[in-house]
Length: 109
Image (tube, rainbow, N blue to C red; front, side, top):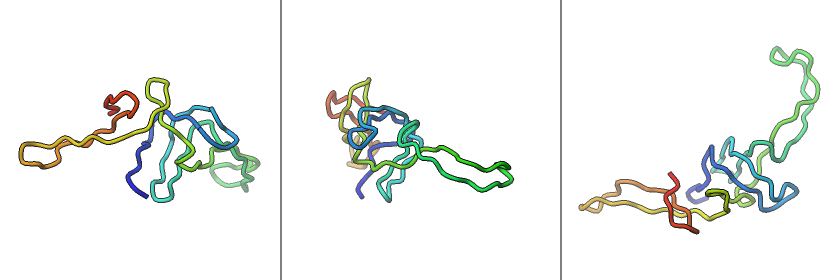
């Protein structure tokens, strides 16, 4: 997959699947497999055996990964695509690569 445009800590909106139109913060990104984990979205239950960490065991609820194509970045509360703008010095060397919101053209970070 090409450059991952969604990063950890971004606010995203789900645009496909059973959790459609819900928003949350990105907890982790797996660019190799094209997956993201979003806070409070796509909750699944797992049965865990008793361990030192969880002596009682039982049913544990956690977030599962979503495909990165099913989320869109939220810039100032509005969904937008993300592009890149490269700043170069006078010799043509890349100085900085910024993410920009396609809708407004503003620099994200």
